[in-house]
Image 1 (cartoon, helix red, strand yellow):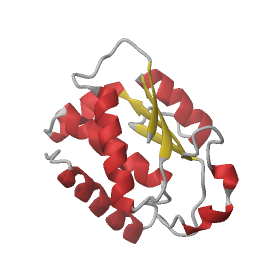
Image 2: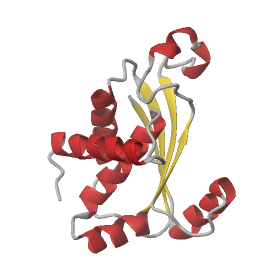
Image 3: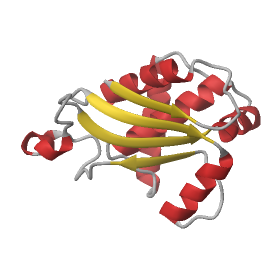
Image 4: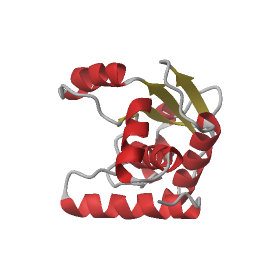
Length: 164
């Protein structure tokens, strides 16, 4: 798995961001049964920057905690079978499946960790697990989808022993 990590802004999270992100992404991909080595881009940014991205890409005029930009559309969440015929989904140099981009607001990680009464590590790991599920076709628009996604997030974090 390749993680392309970038960070901007003065706020620093009190944790090994790149290392933890790699562990959570690997665990999430294993959990959903991704049969390929994968590639993910992760940007840690500011409320101001994620606000602009949220407005530009989603038409929502406020900062958010995480944005996910999947490179693939899945007929069924977590069903990777269609990729056998899709060479265009793989990085030609590494052979890795290109999953997409994750953008996280560092301020929101800290705000939400405090609001929910858990660590910044737990909040950060949760947002990454949540986003990887989006990158592999899961969503939470419908109630049943939300329940499935929430259970998967809990399972991933429990496997990593990152608890509330």
